[in-house]
Image (cartoon, rainbow, N blue to C red; front, side):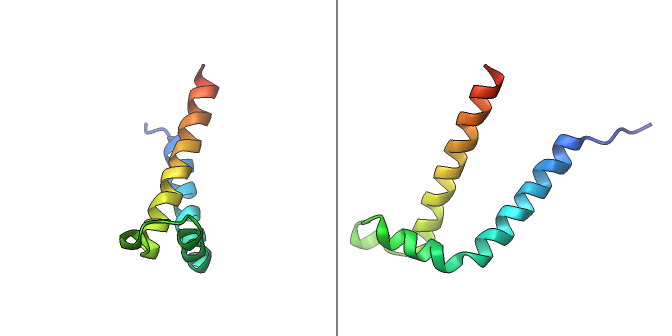
Length: 69
């Protein structure tokens, strides 16, 4: 009998939520990329999204390290 892996379902739900949130907040992501004071070749809004993702991954990693001790 197969068991439901709730961790995988929760991870997928969070991923779907973050993608929809990112789509709805695309204009704000563009503002983030303009406010970071990037060099001229990094002014593309995609880089702002990448930096935002890097910040989110860092926060998740820190929380995971703190909770696992």
